[in-house]
Image 1 (cartoon, rainbow, N blue to C red):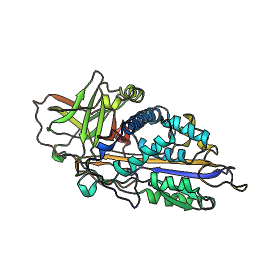
Image 2: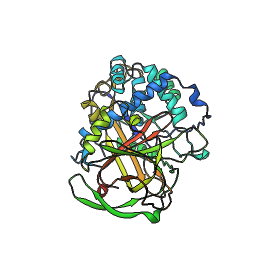
Image 3: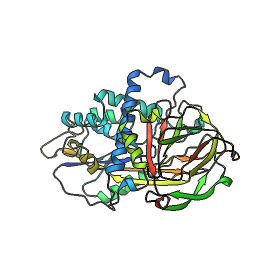
Image 4: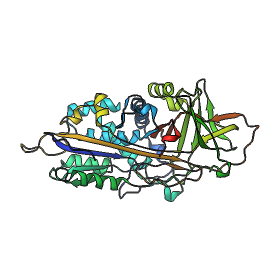
Length: 411
């Protein structure tokens, strides 16, 4: 476990787990006309969140070094920018003015009201569980864990419970840190289950070569299908979109695969992905095409990291230096409150039938397709490293971003 460093500031721990985040005790279903009520301001906020997601993915992939001193850019990787966004927004709501302004700049928002409004609408609509309605089963779970000796200010407590739909946990961080970590981990282990609009046929899955960034290759099972797919070609990449099965609600989730034409083109793609505003929207396939050589590897990726040092290197420092002045009542005996640790964990698995993920973050996928037809025209052969995204189509909110570089590194 992590050793707890003794510091002068009071401790505030964030476990940002994404089992598509759990909305504890609340299940909300929204009618089909909900989006008719959405304002342009909300859609602009979504655009800002999407650009933040792409920017954050670029910097995590290109700069973060894991605990074993290997680089993320050389690793299979998945994270939830939405999860991180919502947790940092919640921190902003409890921060003093200097830390709040720094958080707003980091999250690319102009005001705390705009940020709270977006998070509230995401929690109440976008991430409502669609399982009973025939759509993906998911849960939106954020939880704030507070040292039990601290007393939250009523205004912050109300924002956490109503705007962010988060549960509050009071624990003894000072004397039982390792026990608390186990409790947080146990809480986070929730399952998510989503199905493709159609399934891949397992009998068509065949082993083939997957080419690594160093030029060598490994053998990996590839799924295939002859059904028309949402796909689009650009000068330097191809894009495939696989929709999830939709239920009776208005949510429409899809998984995107961004495949560079060059076998070693992933790094350049990640740079472009995180630098061009609206990249996903500008590279979204709108029509189905007939498929030729279509191969997609089965894979599963689990990734977790402690993010506080990463944030500090990106210039987000004040929340980690006693800037959370609006969360708890202060007194001469209580030092300034700060974030000490920020954990993030995500998981994704892609296969023909779909399985339930056993850990924190999951999007489990199935796809059924017909016979292979050689006369089809669009080739999509994901036999080298690629980028992937899971997002909600109606709003454009990005839930997951990741990259797949080496099947031998899969969990």
